[in-house]
Length: 29
Image (cartoon, rainbow, N blue to C red; front, side, top):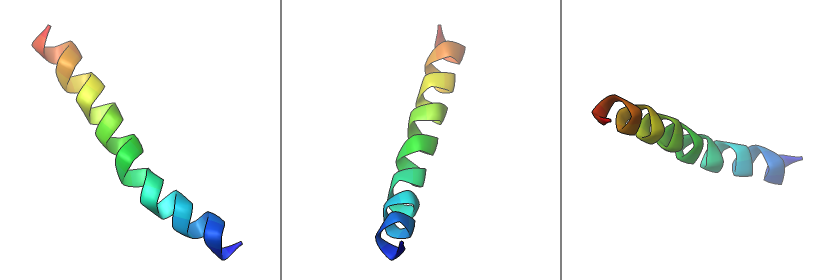
């Protein structure tokens, strides 16, 4: 269970980065 928690914590910033990246790209276009 602890491994899942660490993975989610490590992946959350990446997911947010992808979301903000897509939103910024859509705004630029």
